[in-house]
Length: 367
Image 1 (cartoon, helix red, strand yellow):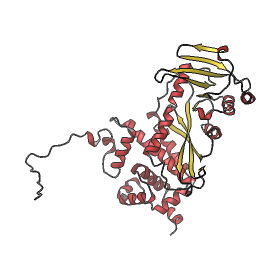
Image 2 (cartoon, rainbow, N blue to C red):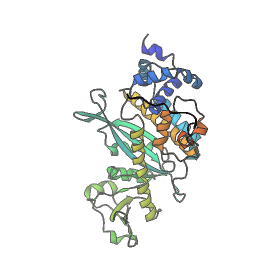
Image 3 (cartoon, one colour):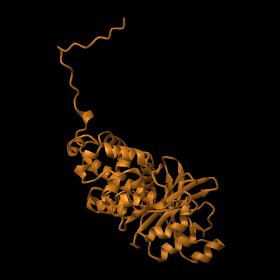
Image 4 (cartoon, one colour):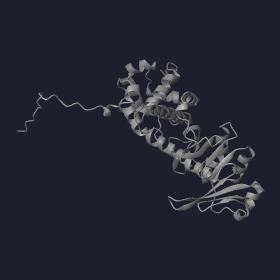
């Protein structure tokens, strides 16, 4: 029977369970997923799921849209959002998002659509992180050659809301992007290019101290003048005493304080930590399917797995790190334990029992 016919026997829930098993059990191939699910077929009945064969799962990943896994992620995020709120100060009146991308290398001969270098394949995952909950709200995939700036508008528009603040690194320095954000009423914070030419900062001083300077300015380069005209921007020069160096931040927001501008860019590091968490702990660098849809199915179920582990971390009384909790879930994935008890008092916290005193240890005779 063909994989297409077999796939009809399995529901979308069966597919999602199989992919979550891939991430939580640390499977590297379709064969491992199939063997693991078959060995756990009795336990899968408690989930109302059936074990999928490798060819059937491969067909389903390629032909069933990844939007279902995406919707599951946002449904879970909506349900448990209160567990994640509060990472951003209430002084910020607008929602704050961090924008960045990460490149994932793949084999060009297998992923023919993932053009990156001549002899190397790769694709970019353009991501927007909600700074208040420190979780992604947009993830778009393009081939590796796609410039971050060219994808920025599509990613920001996917947020829907225009009255927001977007924090970006220096890779998004583009005059047209700055003006597009300004005209739509979206605030941004980024690093200014070192070779940028501006009006004299001392002519438009907002505030100056020994540790920071706050100025208004206009771009004076010919190319910038054609795009930005006489639009006034803001430059915050901030001294980092820990690293003993100055940073310069560019923004179109004149309502925030200089301290808030600097803090927002510092919080942008959370998206780098998210990429690190995703790549080091979930099955993102090795894929069980080669089509774009199969890859996105695996990426969005990785986001679901990340969200589930983060939910457990927040409801547990024991202080887990993400990687340690994920590893212990992997080690105990097919065991019968009460999860609500185990996350609060894990096995390694139970006091070890000493053996009975009257029990003699067996001796090994080496003669």
